[in-house]
Structures are given as structure tokens and as C-alpha cells.
Length: 405
Image (cartoon, rainbow, N blue to C red; front, side, top):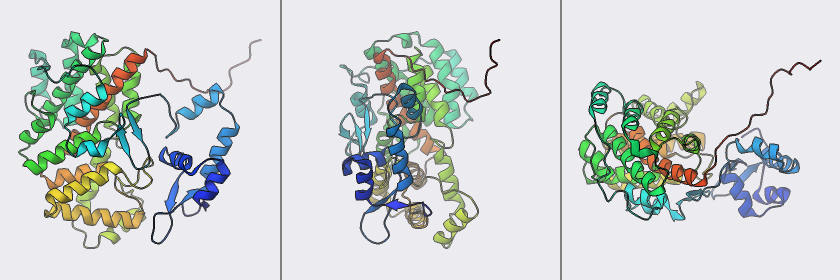
């Protein structure tokens, strides 16, 4: 943003004719970019072009076509939801602070909160049925990475779960429990269990109490993040009448992309590549100078830094701060933040946890997909209850159609 005009918060809010709070809301939704001012303090300056673009958008009015066009841009609301609020420096699940929940709650606690059903779907066994087809698939996919195993196994589970077609919210939550427990089993490479999800992972990976706590917190903070790409895919699938199994497969297919959940792979690769650098500041700068990106830094929904990453990194330091991998992660984060001016995202935090705890390679993505599945089921239930089909329109920009004679 160095070559672009930056203005103060007062100038930006006056040009828009809005309060400071509204200005900050625009920033949190990615509609206006901001940069910190040089020197001490937390003041920021705001991109004048973004402010003008927002003014122009308002001037065009709120006609149906204008709304449809804007709705697909990053940060603009698309659907109404009562699940998750991202508010600059806070992440709220149904009005409850997600970081406060991550201090003690289990992923099952968060599921009960987000799914909002009268009975506890985790109280019963609700385990996926493992028939001969699923057993053969389990063996055949054993050598695949957890994400690929999930994509291979879930359609097999869906084919034999006839109960998944129920549209009742309580029944959907029970199906969601079966989905989550099968995902946990696949990620852990163990048989499905009714143990708490984070305990299944910790037991399979032989983690101590510190590691188990970090897994639990990472799962809670991965549970939902409003209408990200994979969640939108899940809601589209839900709106067509698909089952929770099919919608979860849609979410997984999107999540694996390198600009979504697959970002953890890019972060892990960077951490490994820079591991032996004597001068991390210089190594990060050279990486940028060569045209490579620094993955996992800067999140447009959190102008002052990803609150999920901050919580997890602080907890990692508190739990395992004396381990070499934690010290390295802190040095790398400090160097990358210094050079880029950006703060780490949850992808950096989960990869740091993976490395510090000696988890299997790719564990960060496994934890992310398992945690996010809880949010997907919540959005599935909410979308099903709405009874609407998601069907955006396209503005045609191709060759002109021939005129009728």
C-alpha cells in the first residue's frame, strides 16, 4: 500500500459520512484496507481508493443487480446467519467469545452451542456404521494423507447411512455427530470412538496433557469462521437437499485448496525451508525479493491480527515455551512480521503446534478439517431450516448474441 494514498480515520469517516465504529466495521469486513502508522501506538491510516470505491458503490444504489454483483466480493455479506460474528478483534460463536471458549471448552461443547438442538447428539453412541465396503475403503486408503482419506471414505459412509436423509434438526445433529466421529477416526487412523474428539487425536498421536490441550483449543478455534469458501460450498449443497455427508465432502474439496485449509501445507514448507537460516530477517526478505510469498501472514478480516493465532501462540508458549521448535516459531514469526508488517494467521499457529508437539506431518490440516466440520454441520442445519435454494445469477459478458431477423 506504499504507493497509495493513506488517510486518517477522521478523514475516512468524514468522507463516508459514518461513525468511527462503522468505519472499523468496513475494515473488519475487508471493504477498506488499512496500514499501521510508523512509530509507537496503534493508530492506523486508511486506503483512500477503497474509501472512494465504497462511496461510488453507495452512489450506484441498492438495486437487485448491484446487490447481486457486490455480494460475491470478499467481505460483503451474502447470507444472513446467526452463528458466527467476526468483529475486527473478536470472534464470536452465537454471541460467545471463541477464545474464551478455547480456554476450556471441548469441540463437542462448541458443537452443542452452534447446532442449538434441544438434546445432546453426543450423549448417545451415534457412531458411523463400518460395513464391509467401508472396511475395504479404509484399507485401500491407508497410505493417503488424512484429507485425501476423508474425501475417499466419506462417500462410502454416505452410501450406507440412509438415516442421513432426514431433514429434522435433531436428526441432522445426530448425523453430524457420526460425520465428525468418522472424520476424527480417519485423521487419527483409529477405529471410530465416542471418546471426546480431542482425546481421540491425543491418544492416537501419543500426546501429553500439554499437547492434548493444544489440540482441543485448536479444534475449538477452527470450528467456524462465518461464510468462508468451504462453508459457502456446504451451504450451497445443503440448499439443494444433499445430506450432511455430501455437504461435508463439498466442504472438504474446497478446504484442501492452497488458499484455504491447504495454506497449512505452504506454511509448513516455508518453516522447513527457513529452519537453518542464521539471519531470519534476511532470509524472509530474500524470499520476498525472489517473488515468493510469505504464507500465513495477514488476514483481511482482522486488521490488528488474527485473534485465533494470538490465542494459540500464547497458549503454545505457555505450555511448551522451552521447546526448540517453539523458540524457532517465535523467531520466524517475529522476522516475518518485521519484514512484512503483517501478523500470523491461525495457519501459522496450528503448524507451530504440529511441529512443537511432534505430530504427524500434515496434522495441522487434519485438525483444521475436523474442527471446521462442526461449523459446517451448524451451517447445514441453519440453511436447511431456511428452506431456500442458493442460486446466484451471472452477469453475461461474452460475445453479443446474434439479432433475430
